[in-house]
Image (cartoon, rainbow, N blue to C red; front, top):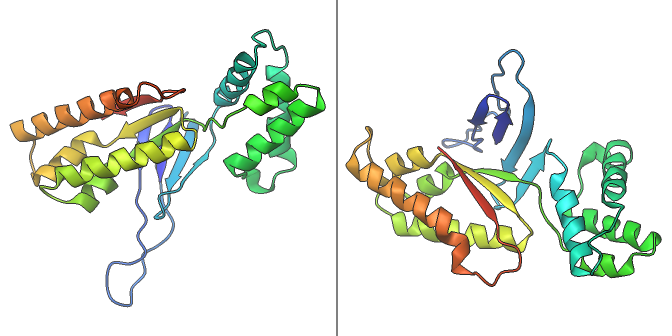
Length: 222
């Protein structure tokens, strides 16, 4: 679970149990300073599925504008109206404000069709909200000395997220990953080299497929 606030990031991990016939507590606790504002809560489930709460709505505007542009309607005037309708639905009619991304875009398509914009509805492609991901769990799963397995796991996850419509991802925990993968307790030159390799990999990953229609924005945060 990753919490983004106005003063920074916090990450907690929930485990089912640590030994025979045991169970770990499922609650997670975060500390907030006076005046802190929660900007995003992101959960990565064991299945690899991501769930995001409390995010902005710019990504919805981007998705609608992309569809309008592709349909040849750059002057489409109802972007804010469609987005406001979706937000109102989530706040007043959607249980727990929880909706699968595919269901959300199906609703947007129906809204577009109702106002006679079938062409834009046809061109609408899912864009997910910005997502924060800690890489520490991937490094822990790979283990000391298994950098190749770590990079393969990250490449697989990035591909799945892009296919699901992710447009912006914030990665955290890079320094801790370096320590884990190097099996080090203190920072050293080998950690420096691996950190530089991870940063170069993440910054250059999207260039591996330059023909992809909508490249992702990858942000590195520690």
